[in-house]
Image 1 (cartoon, rainbow, N blue to C red):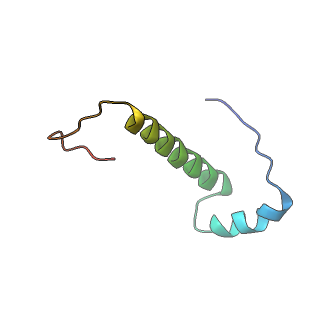
Image 2 (image 1 turned 180 degrees about the vertical axis):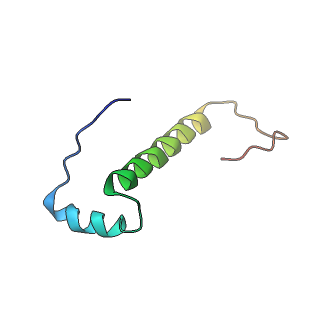
Length: 61
């Protein structure tokens, strides 16, 4: 595992904490958001590869 330091601008602190209110922790909320974004980025890169024929495979992006 790699540790990172994230600096949150003061203007984003309160809205971010409010958005993470239902999460176990602010760290957990941020980690989940980063994982979601990484998955979306990987899916976009995969979709850009040609040919990408998923017909009949039951897969969908």
